Amino acid sequence: MKVLNIPAHVTFDESTGKADCAICGIGMTAPSSFGGIPRSNMLASFLVQHAVHSRAGVASGLTAKGDPTKAAREFVWGDQ
Image (cartoon, rainbow, N blue to C red; front, side, top):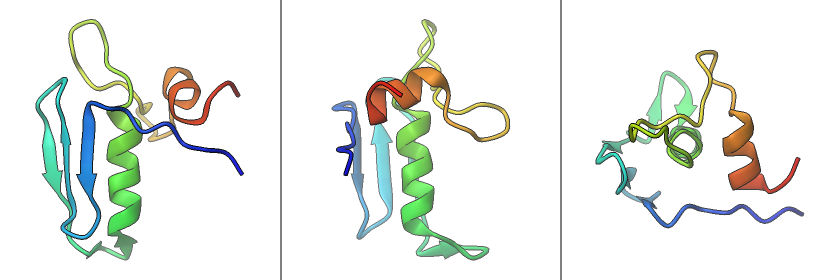
């Protein structure tokens, strides 16, 4: 089983659905479910998106299609 690296700059609380990123200042509150998507999936997407940022401070962990970028995969899951 792989251990996930959770970035220190991302805080989240699954019970309330709140997530915040200290680098770019973006946060979210996820409902328990949205169109059949569970809260845990939405928080996981936020975590991966905000695992890495561009030089300008913009979250860059997901591609336009919603797949994790190579940098995010390496940070969150280690060397792929």
